[in-house]
Length: 398
Image (cartoon, rainbow, N blue to C red; front, side):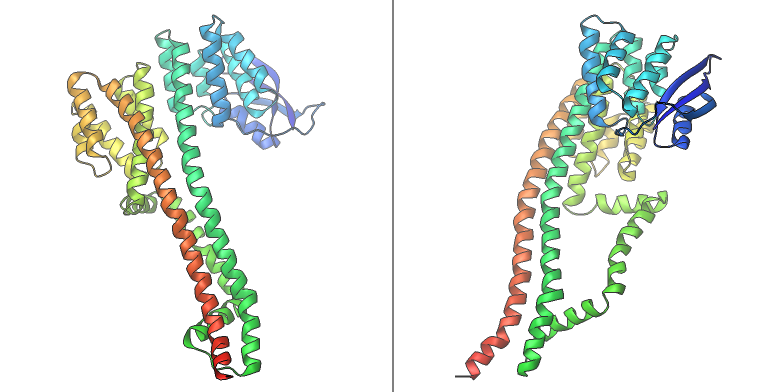
């Protein structure tokens, strides 16, 4: 819905405009998050339902950074460049955010200050790189670095999602086959065997027992299947429990190593982008904390932050951690000693991205046939248990 509002800016200027939101409360919250004091808010006369596009998505941020780099490098001024991207995005929530950013810049504010008024859309890392670009008059290059950073993040996300999706579908298919066997096939075979009074082997009796349990008490068992997901959700809401869960996951054989390498690559990718934009090392480390959710990796970055603040070296902290590969530690330590930390972090982040992509691909290739073999073994075991009594009947009838 489209809402018309009157609001007071921090400068004392009164603003009358429109904003798109799903409800009045969401519109008011968005305006307050932008630093405005709402004086009036009501449905606009021409309000009509519109397709809601979530602001701050990587697709929109990538479009923004690409277009801003191109327009600024071609000589366009900042406000016309923002207006051009705003028109291209169209009537979406992200477009509304860009309009508010453009208005703030037109009123004399800096681009960084305007972006910081929308923290849910523009993360601290994004704002810090833009601030560095403004401070050093290299805003086009800053947007270019952001574009490259977002592209790499998208590529990694697609790789991981693609690697997880097919095995997940196979697992769901396996569960579906088992459900059909237990819920429909086994009860019918049991009726047949009861009618024929056929003696049953132990494996067949076991399967029939499982089938009877699941079909008779499914209303109790089904909620128990949801219980683990509820527990995981509750754990994630508790920082102390989440820290223990992250520590357990990161130390899990094979899976933990893959998780650690993906997360460390993400941190180094952010460091490389920010250092290339001439952000100070202390600010780079500090801002990268905002992009980390895993508590184990966050603790490592906090240790690096403390060491650098005390005059220590990044390589020494990384060398003492089980999360970082020795080759990564060696490369960063060498960069520190030679005064080429930016180049070494940039190189290592690229190398880790390539290695992680290969690792995820190999893991997928191993997991897919494993799941197929498990599904085949389950179906084969059920089939053999069902046909063994029939074979015995056929042999006894000769």
